[in-house]
Structures are given as C-alpha cells and as structure tokens.
Length: 451
Image (cartoon, rainbow, N blue to C red; front, top):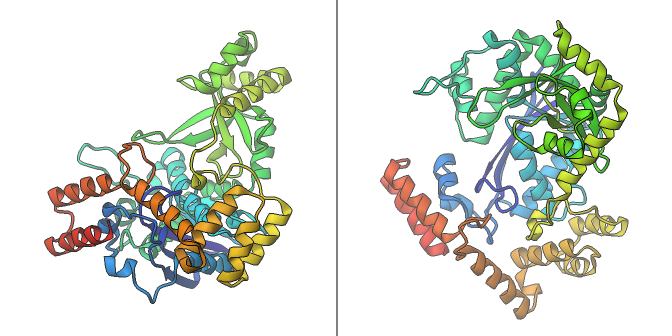
C-alpha cells in the first residue's frame, strides 16, 4: 500500500510553523486509488503566518480562524489516527522527507504525541518522488519531459514538471492537487524507468541499503545541490558513524584514492568528511537514500573499491571523523528545535498516551508531572492555547510575553515569522502583483488586527 500525501503550511519553518491542510490518497501496489482524504485546521494563536504562504496557497484569513475547523491539536490527532488506520504503508510525497516529514514530526512533537515518527514505525516506511525524479534525470533522462526556465535551466518543481508531462488541471499549492500530480509522476517513472522505480523501492528499507553498501561494491549516489542539475557520485562504503547506526560513510572514488587517504593522517581524514570538495559523504540509510547499483564499472574505481574494502582501520577513522563533525553541533536554543535532543523515558511515554485521551483539566496535571522539561514546556503551552483559564494569570502573562517578544523581535536571524518579516513580505507581494488588490487589502487588515 502507498499513501501519497502533501501539506500546506503557514510558512517554511518546520519548528515554528504548522500545517494548515493535509491531503492524502491511499493506493494499492498498482498505484490505483482506493481512498482519499482532505483535512484542514485553524491556525494556532501563537503562530504568525507568512504572508507569502497565504498568497501562494490562497488560504484566507477567515479560514485561519474558522471555528468549524479543528484546532491544531485536534488536527494532529486526526492525522495520527489516519496513519494508524491506513498503515502499514509507504508514505510518499514530493520533497516530503526534507520538508513534509519534518513538519509532521514537529506537529506530533509539539502536540505531545507519544511517537513523532509514526510514518517510520509499525511497518510503515517512506519514499520521496523528487529523489526518483533526480535519479531519472541521471539514469533515464528521456523518460520525462523537462521544463526549463528563461535561462534554459531545468526546473524540478512539481508545478512545472507535472504539466510538462501531461498532467492537466494541476491545482498547484493545494495539497490534494499536489498529491494527484505526485502520483502522476510516480506512475510515469514506474512505467518508463522500471529500474529506477524498483531500486528506489528497495531503498525504503534501511537494512537493504546497509547490506548493499557494506558489500563493498561500487555504487552511484545521486544528489542535487543548489540550482545545479542532479548528478551521480561513484563510490563505495567507507565506514559508519559509531554514534549513529543510520549514518554510513560513502567515499567518492573518482576524487579519492583510499590508499593515499589511509596514509595521510587524521587531519586529512577529518577534511575528507567536511572540506570542499567533500571526499566522503554521509548516507542516512533510514531516509530512502538515492543510491543505486551500477554496471560497467571503470577498472580504476573497482580497484579503489576493492582496496577500501580491505581497510577496516580507515573505516574506523572515517567513522570517528563523522562522529566528531556532528558532535560539534550545539544544543538548539528553543524547545521547538529540541525534538532530537534525547528520547523520552518509559514513564513519560505512558503519560503522553494518557494526555492524548484525557480532559483538559487532566492534561494540566499530566503536563506538570512530566520528567522531560521539553514536555512540561510544550504541555503548558498547549493548555494556554486551548484552555487558558486553567492556568494562573501569571502563567498566561508569561506565555503572552513570549509571543510578544518573538513577534516583535528585531533579530534578523529569528527562526520564526516576525512583524518585520510580515511587512517585508506584504511589500514584496504588492510590488509583484502576486494577488488581487482586494486580497492584498484583506491580508493587510488581517495582520493589522492580529499584531
């Protein structure tokens, strides 16, 4: 079973924005539709939405505050129940692993779901069609018609790619329209580039990817950086991060000779995993990486792969360098960004399950009893957003001050939407004529009243 899904959100920050629409189509293995859903919710009061997000999606201020729609908390529960009902399945989107998945994880995390990783648990796995598109560009370029911009550069955005390949009436920037377009592209790749499709399906399993890499053969890793077209890097397994079993090292054998690197010392190994050009890349095996078996391998690359396979000390050194590189990352400042800062205790997970089904009065007691300070903070905020009268006046004032501080922040690097950002985006929308005069007036009035 496959679930093709898409989100429309209040902005581009998974940690500080929220989904406003969730649409999905359940299909069988043949990609034929079985069922579809389309959920919307209200905007959570602490979030300042991005004007560009509203302009692009067409979400109106009235929709954001529509009392007939579920709250963000209720919305998260709806989606959680859907994942349980439709699973086990492969959860598929277009750039979903980099964005939609992160937004959903944050939604579950910030609404105190016991498991933010629902699409990876209980037999579920993931697939990202944009990765299939990149692999198709590299290995089966004549499979699709490629849209280009005025400079002749290929455009990989779904709203350009789908119409160029016969998908008509694409309601772009509507979640359900994007889901239908994603299924259309997936079917074309399945039918016209079956080798890309089949290997991508195997890449859903992290154990399949691990086994393929640890065989030591020459493989192709397809990636895209910036505006450049996707390209394949030819390389082989080069170790594992000892602190992360899902992070395997992949040495670019076109650029690096493992014999030379093994003799060059620890500084050279550290540079290989962090310097530019990067000689060793990290393959995160639980994110359906774009890695492929290849044939007709150049003799030089095969020899280097054979040499690398016999160098366990180099594997260990590269793994240690990867661990050191990522150990330098400091603890995120804000609770919303601390989703990956440790697992919950067994007792807290039990309380999280209780929280989901309790009354708000009971939720207040549960929130105060969590061991994990992140959960106490998020629980208190949820009470304030959904049942503020349960909190003391002092607590309500503290949350109001935090919201005021964030919205009016003068920090140009603030990770959330600020009033200054809103003013700038409204000016851009007006200058570009992105919406009608009436719609722009509505947006201006909405933000004036909100702020």
